[in-house]
Image (tube, rainbow, N blue to C red):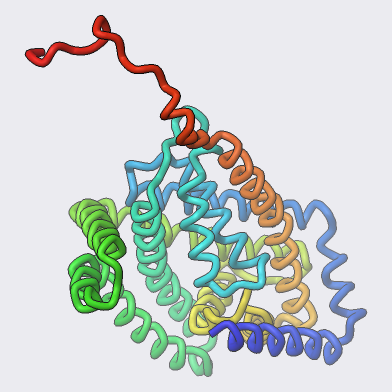
Length: 356
């Protein structure tokens, strides 16, 4: 898997370089420079507003964790997936770790999150996000068909949407029965693993399943989270519309929904490609051409989007590292065995009588 991810990253980078050479580096740079500092900062602020919506969507499903903790964890998870050479799965692992330590950013309202609870919270957030994404992609396909009835993207995206819906259905079933499956696997492997490992596996399975059951017992919260994620996806289309506006391209908001939705549907299939290298550029170029936008402008938009992700993501990753270092400093040190042996014995005056 690791070798495949590296190979896909190199292929995507080669495709991006080839597109830049084919379209002309000068025209691409001209499109990027044309947005200006004000336009670029407008896209950054628009993305921060979308991140706030995503934090509220996560909190709608996981009410036990503060909004601030979830917002920080979500931004770190996205930053790891977009700024580091990891696939979406790698960003998920970092997101779970960030959720465990995000209480250091949340101040007095924050609390320590255990590993099973953090894993459960991240899996539920991804599930509700995909539920909102399915509705958003459907909206995008309708906007695309309304603009171009014979679009070649409509049929494959609809097929992918059906497969995505089936996949998320199975993912939800797994969350509702994952604890029993994990315990069954622990019993099957019981003869080949240490007793303490088996006990820890069983305990983690029970804790994880209890957390899943508690969250999925509130379907209204799940629906609210999915709807807020849908609004977040619409907001993501809004950032594309703002970027195209400052790039000088004439595009309606429904056109921005079509481009962003279909592009997200294409990128969700290529989740193994780190940061969607090459896939994102190809999707924007092809979909932008369907709306009469020059390929160099669409490629410039994709590069600007990556620049925006770096401007937001790198400070979040650096802050996360500082947060981890702070957590290591504040972790209480274990008492040495010699200190325990040297502890004075309790005097009769401080010993509790047996009858009390």
